[in-house]
Image (cartoon, rainbow, N blue to C red; front, side, top):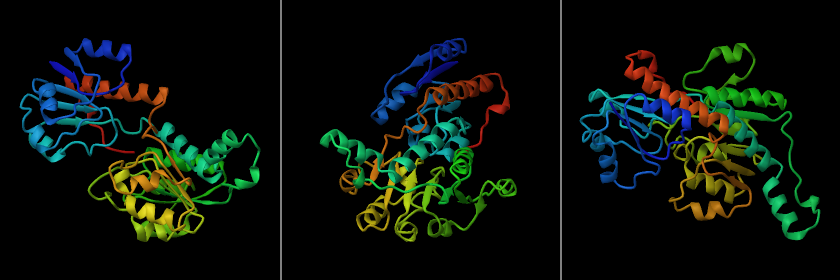
Length: 316
């Protein structure tokens, strides 16, 4: 059994040692940059462990030996799942591994925007003066948080919000009624999340149904002091519409853990003081990365041992 770690997947010594007991192991430390490089790396593999590489139809059809892709990620949008299914390729992911990490970063971004932490830090470094009058913020207590997506991360975000005495509304295409029964949140219509929330936080997976689902009509319906947070995928949001809302003062600010660096709006967005951006690092804590690797490798172990419990459903 040939196992190939395709790209910049972070595994510790024990995890690599376990993989070595399962078959012939080949590890690449960087991300492939061309189609040829993907094929060259994966061509003779039975199992791929992959975190960043994309597998469209034409690539999957050129990998006749491939039996499994164990994703080192939650999202599965990097793979043409229909082609994989037709080819009999098992695809697994690691749902829920970063619920604490991403939910905590969500509140880091919320607080950074509402309390103007970054511009205040820059000002004091530059001026060497306590110009506190420049940075009046807002409190979270009593505010309404709108959560889009109530998978593991969305639920953890709601639980943290309870500690700030916030009101919580949510939208999910598959609502979990027990969350309402337990009075953790209240489900409302998708558009109403925006119009009734002081802060909207995105925790949806990227699918054909969610790509570009948040546009100008939704964002512009938020109150003028509204804050938008996205720790999910950038493609869920119309970035031009978001930039326009910030430019026009329709939104007070936003916190983004993923942005489209190639979009024409990027230059303007990057210059906005009311925007806090991080480099898609929500998952990246010591604890979450270890859990992520453990689940990813356990999926491989279960596949090799013909244990069908390896098939995990996507859930953020």
